[in-house]
Length: 346
Image (cartoon, rainbow, N blue to C red; front, side, top):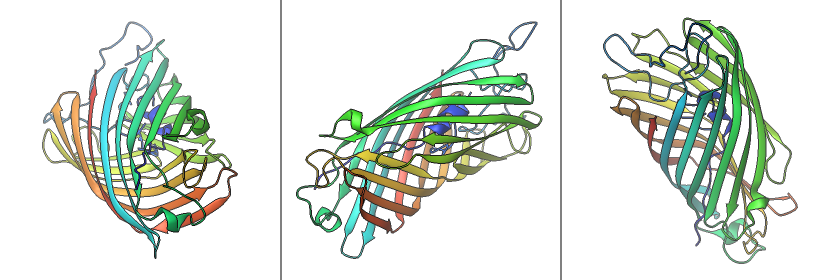
């Protein structure tokens, strides 16, 4: 049985929150759900973090914006994330599969003027995707299904603040998802996104838009991009609500450095299969709805550790041949997962 690796499907989130999306951006996702511009005259204010009167920090994953311009906070943020999803039953007699992933992500935001910010994102991922009964899923093939996978993603975009209460965010992403033995170029999936920012009240901004992505062996697909910056209920509120990409989260500050949250989102991945796979040069498409309980620990002022445990409550597995014809389409059982993430801003 071979293992296979998968990469996160939502690069649209990176562009809405750090100038890019999920943790500190928007869902993971966006479908997942960011972070100092120089205002007009007389000069740039110091980039600051919103802190409650009792010393509690902003939600570790919250999109933060400057109240003067609405641009995300300037800087560089690093994410390292590991996930394991236990075996999920595919169907009667079709076996199960499990997933393990490790991701490293670098997101950068640089102000080019008092009203415009350039944002970029690069990420890499490896993992395992293991089927217990490949012969049942693809009866006519020979050999294994899936295998070790590599994922790369790059994004470039900008945030343009037209006024304190209105702005636009836009960008383009390129990602590659391919199994070992497949050509990297065959896993290429380009995408674009655009969103508008509207200030609701105080320093709270809402982002609304969409992303357009060309998947593998199929029509392009569109996902909504949603974002919510600032703090729900004001700086002294312990409750926070965030909307990112195609996900949403509700969190509560237990202490000055500990938070508890409930997070849900939507993910999609298209992975190019190897040339010697049971389904040669085909596509493994996975769509899922993960829901998790998350504990966040503020290790230092700009360093956070997040532990999530939950279940992928809906999973759709589709296997396509090299012509784009569906060979297998199955809605699998819910599967438990655990995820550990460290992120820091510099």
